[in-house]
Image (tube, rainbow over all chains, first blue to last red; front, side):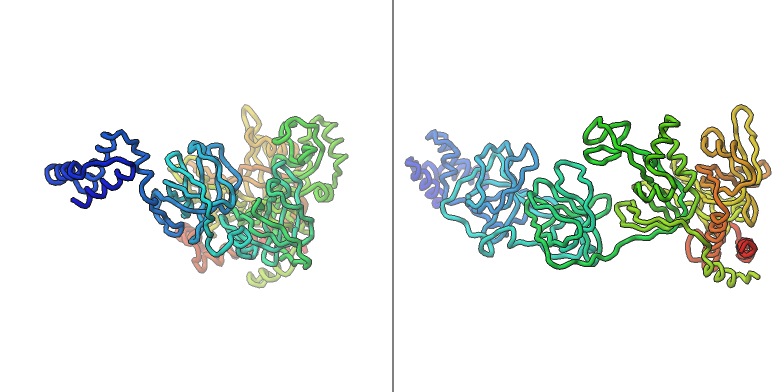
Length: 417
Length: 188
């Protein structure tokens, strides 16, 4: 007890206040012995008593305590844990939410961790590459990963001596994602892929730079290159290495996104894309609404609904013909998108004659009726790339004759004369 | 749960006529109704191609059309009223006989003496050509034969249930498929 009293006295001495050690000791003694207060609680209570008595602000006293207990990033292990970190700002990310002031990665010699500074922390912004002492940050957990949150109880102090980040100089390139086969990509991971741009699509949104399909020897996947990535455009039919792209899942299908941390390198080789061309045989059992003579937005090529584009509002539409068909094998169904050229060929109707038909009847519905009349109930083989639940039809062939082989085989089994 | 479209099953008229086992999830009024056929086809939607041989407006206040579509093994009854306007219009306007393709849902009706009558409520009827009719016969023969083999090996739950309920004599249905194939041979 004497020792405890001495240490309290020492701390007050540092602030220039000489508290008689006997006073401290007697107070401690009373709390611990008489009132059965645990020693550390007693210590704190006594300290607070003298702080009050000598009008010393509490935070001044506590801040001036010896070096705070520092946590190394690798030792962060508990959700809700408080920590003090000495770390370097390795990367600052694009801010995604108005309540967030900054988000990015912190690193020390043991590892890196994501950090978030909330706007209401009211702290000055951190600079990338600078090192800081961050006090009283809170450890949180998201998607099985730890991160630290800097809130209004935290404080940040810039350090003049830089913190070494584990494994030498940390840059995003040094942390390049693993090269993967397109067929192996699954949601919520970073990856690097090499592939050929199979198709580029009409761009439907201003925040998207490019979107389409990229393929390698194992498969084809949808990609989106966001405008904010500031990456160069890719060309259809050329092969590229896409580094550090994000794989996400939508409607159960994996797709990849290129962002600021990604890179695109053109390749000299011509990657052979596994012809993941899909073939389906079945009867056309339905042609869905939105088929026939439609109008598209001149800006983004989306089909208009009641003369309006979802993105660009009321626009003067451009006529187009298409079919959203349902094929049915008896065991499964397959949605198929048939473009204007194939629709014209299949139904023996040109876009111009379809427009004339609709004008004549004052109803574009007559074109849909005509398509149904010509096509529904018949057997077709379609081929094309698969996208979500659709086949983007590249060829469609009506079944023109009976499968003799199948007929003979069954006839033999059933002993048909 | 993602929306999924019922596949249109391929069943000959004779087999559909023999069917009387319906299943419906009682706890969910929106659950689809299925008809289990003697070879174990679990039918909600059906696709048939045959010859429209009869049609009659049997409605009293508004039009209600009954059509009879034959295949090599028997005939299907189809009913279309105000809730199937396209199909009703087709039946009103078409000339007999005609090859037609029908996509629709099966429905059943139990008579006072306990017989179950099966019919089809068409979603779509279209006039088609003879080739399409022959393609359908071959397609339906193939799928029926596959189900018959499954009954014989009892390989899935629908086969087991069908066998249990109907005591399916697969020879009868092999004979039916044979009849259907013979009609193709005649045409050939």
